[in-house]
Image (cartoon, rainbow, N blue to C red; front, side):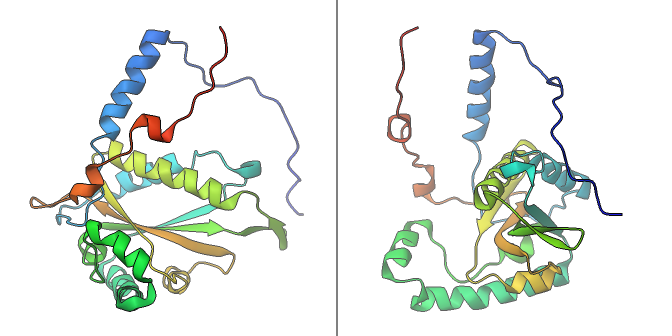
Length: 231
């Protein structure tokens, strides 16, 4: 028997928070202050991160909204040193081509203030790598099912994952070698899934640094436009 087709059923809102306007502002300002301490790093310590912490962060990402609630994502969490080494080797091969000119002069110039190069030691030093896959389509009863708003959905889930990792006291770095199809084979993922990102996850090394330019964020007036009506 195949799975029953999902049908619409309205449920009372299961979770609700009733807080005052002042409490709302206090909560979000506290959250903003915490997020201002989030930094992408490339220097990791060898301090281990318990699997349960990684799992809880990924579970939080799995609560993200998605097109038609299809949840078109899969997260592969890797702590195995041999597998991380294989990923680093394959990624650095692609990065060497990129920094040798494959990325183009404009892109390479944009990266100069970040201080990156083809060497990616964080891929083996960080205790965990989380490879994020986007499911371009799904399967039901052996039939191909179209997924909707896949990049948007996976992007939201990834942002929630990064936020969860920061909340747990961890640091991470987004890494997107191009092309990334080698990750399907290494991670044993099917052809309907597209690797979109590697997150290196762990605790910062004692001598960890961040690029000075990374601390320069756009002012609110540069990222927000408001059209406010009469109240």
